[in-house]
Length: 310
Ligand code: PAF
Image 1: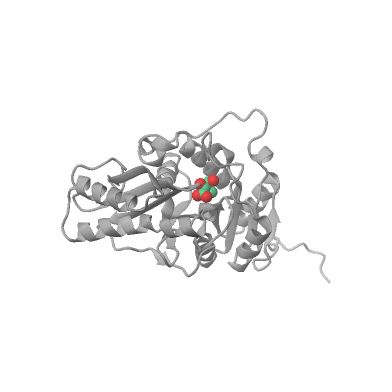
Image 2: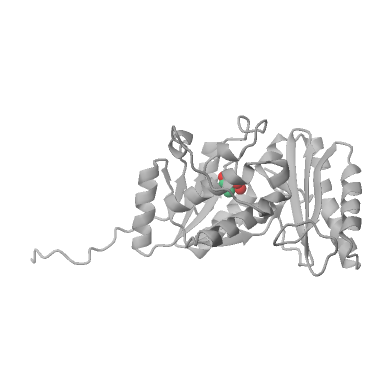
């Protein structure tokens, strides 16, 4: 029998069908680098947990398009603005782990806050321009926290692709810009918005709503539908479409409007006149929840309707 050591060493097979949970940053980084070296592609799904069908659709797609689906679960404190819901943000780690594994996720990365932001942390990514609009105005500092943690996640997990839901339209634009500006070797994959059967966009924050509030919250979808119908009937004046959405929202007495916007789908600047496409976007408070929703006028609606509510 020969004592020769085979060269190159055969890579250790990576178990894709049993999900491993990693919380240590160095362990995550070492594994991600090893998989990259061995040509095993990672599809990253960055999340803050409290999974619903929207998250699961991203995980399934990540698994289908890559060798490995890696989901990160981290409730990122730096993206919560003062007075927001950080301390009561829904957390259900056991259910999340079961759901992620069921959706084909091979690695669940669950870092500790103290490890991500150690004592003395002082470096942030500061997105500009795109954040002068929409949620950037009502949640100052929010996208700085998002961009900072997403850049860190890209560095720690080395994904080939990263998946984000279109409910957070502005977040996708900010991250796409960061990827361009920093020449990051990752493809951003925007994924269709997933709605409950009544039209409410799925969100972890829907868990804050009572049955009655959940029913009222379908008004966001109704307002966007009204905007789409008016646009399809030929309306090109954004002011008229904003008024229509505002009136529809206010037909539900519980609604407190944060913003109603018709903007350029790339720059997010408010429009005076719609040429071909426009982003219609809303943010409202209903009871304890701040809810956002959007649609792109001039594009076919690609939203997915899932049964039931989580
Ligand atoms: O969309 C989210 O859940 C978060 O903003 C993200 C991208 C995971 C960053 O914390």
